[in-house]
Image (cartoon, rainbow, N blue to C red; front, side, top):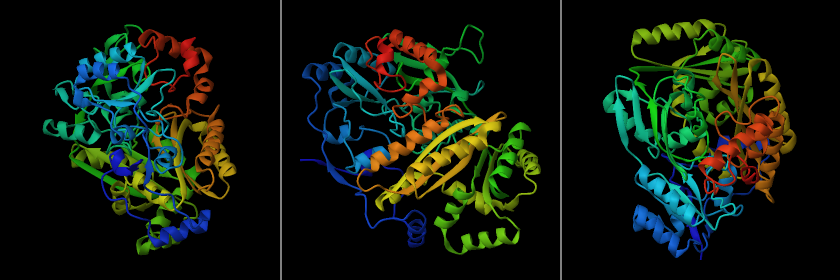
Length: 539
């Protein structure tokens, strides 16, 4: 007998999912040719009998308490993967799920160290699990060559350990979710300021383990920029890194942990640079005529150091889709207004500023807007519309899956001089692989030397092999990225990008990572199959 599985089992995103409006379905059918089919939202799936031995279960229970070693099907299925398109298809009956034998919930960093010791003794693979938002297979329950695999759920590590308001450093345990971190810091007048699309579910530990980037990273920095220190549990013992704001005491070993995806150790605490909560925020929308002109505007903002905290440029396709799916009189009015202004290739630019006072906001806005002169200003309503819908992507994806749409994202980054080429090559690869499709792109993070590109793909699902359809397209896009940009700007490596890592960091770089793993995790229990191939680790 299978278990009925739906989004609630995965810890649903806040808000209602809902269906797509009729005008959106009509537009999609015209663009990608939707068939009259549906992808089931809930199916009966089976977790199988747990393979955890009685001895291992007893040893784990002795560390965390018997009630915190769970082998029931619902708990195990709920930690059986992340939130990629392929993951969601599997939850809807579109492929085999790798299900952990047990879910272990430690309550302290010391318990995490002890759990790893038990796992080494009983030959158990360990998959660290936070919010479960990975879209690259980073939390897939792979056992490798181990006797069984357990999901190490860090949800009970949920404390604000300390706040240093003078230095503006907060120590947060790894299982604290992003919204909870903001709630805990609010009485201190502080904020982390890290707001990725996964904000509603993702955790502090996950941010550090994947080198996350948030929507306001142009102002607050990427998450690795915020990390002052880490506390890490490894099979070789506990490791604490970060004792000063800067150091010349050899290479920064903290950087070995940040971005290591649970392969070297389990992050249990993160010392995070925090900032005063903004007193005022302002979001505005502008339209630039053409992608090339838009990227030049953003490059100028970055190189003149007047970026808004949120700086996001959508290409023509993404702008068209946003207007088409919103529909109604307002969208028609925007189109008419842009046409009257002579805009032929509208690209939406959203700028958002966070400030400690109205005076600061006016000064920062004026500096940014001076660079954007020549763009058509749509004002606060368009900016606020983007902010209001900034976390709706996962819910929209569920609705699109319901009507048989292949909908997935991928991202990369490169230097300004190669940005246009990279975008063109990835778009071409995806279009060639998927045929009739919509390939959207936006520039989501800008730097003085370059920027990231974030692609969203819509195509009619292959009824016979939807998983294979996307895997072919993703491989083509990944191969197009090689030599032009990074395989991942902020989604991390996981399983999906591991085959392309060597092309980016070289064979010697992979061997360096494997050597580190041999020291910290000599038996290879930590997160098998992620970041580096097991045969490279084994030497």
